[in-house]
Amino acid sequence: VSDARPVGVFDSGVGGLTVLSEILRRLPNEPTIYLCDNARTPYGVRSVEEIRRFSGEALDELAARDVKAIVVACNSSSAAALGYLRERYDIPILGVIRPGAAAAALATRNGRVGVIATPATVRSRAYFAAIKDENPALHVYEQPAPELVPLVEAGQLDGPAVTAAVRRSLAPLFRLPDSDDLLPYSRAPEEPIDTLLLGCTHYPLLRSTIVSVVGAGTAVVDSAAATASSLAELLGINGLDAPPATSVAHHQLTTGDADRFAGTARRLFGATFGDGLGADPTSVSRVELGAQLAAAEA
Ligand code: DGL
Image (cartoon, rainbow, N blue to C red; front, top):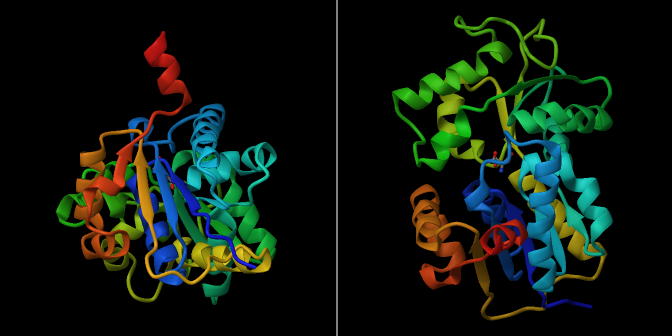
């Protein structure tokens, strides 16, 4: 059995392309539709109700385009809305929290895992619960890092200002000199953590700066590759694999400006975006979701 329909991938913004890139690498036969809500990003500072409503509108759009499975690439949405979304649709929906938690649990040697994520993701405690589900003996320390998404959205991935922001964000987890040792949502680590989970779509783009701050002794893991593997498994188990094809179509939809999305994506992902998705900017189009339509009509 096979299924030629596309896989839908949803994120609040461009950051989810980190997950899409891994899906394209791992599953080169699968056509995809990437939908991002650039007009209303960031989600990570919004309430659970808002994240659910916006995510539901986005998934309505993907469902209307007859996707065979949906990856919620956004950590904030996976954390706040996955159960809600799964009840709304018959389509299989995969989030990024569980795959990321499994990758972190596998990586740690000393049993101490730090997680940085948006405020919404940390508030949900979804990573704490998922890592404890993997192995209840692990210690999990979570830290919101709201400074980092705006930097990535602005295309700033390195330089002194980025290093300073990364240091500030990681200070409590790593007891860096400028740390106040106070974690808003969990205890400060008594002993050094050896694994840092990047619990947000955007942070893998800051990986080299993050590694330079935490040092080579810390494993830095993210959800992207693990989520692509989970998707491969999901498609395989359910007979949803795409048939072999000579050309595979990929479309990107944004609620924001299509040219701006294509420009940012290329700036952030360079050759990966070009090679993986085809350099043709016309594959990016603008889409309106529920609330935008309602607002326009009002
Ligand atoms: N995609 C979001 C996440 O992974 C980050 C950007 C946002 O806050 O919307 O949590």
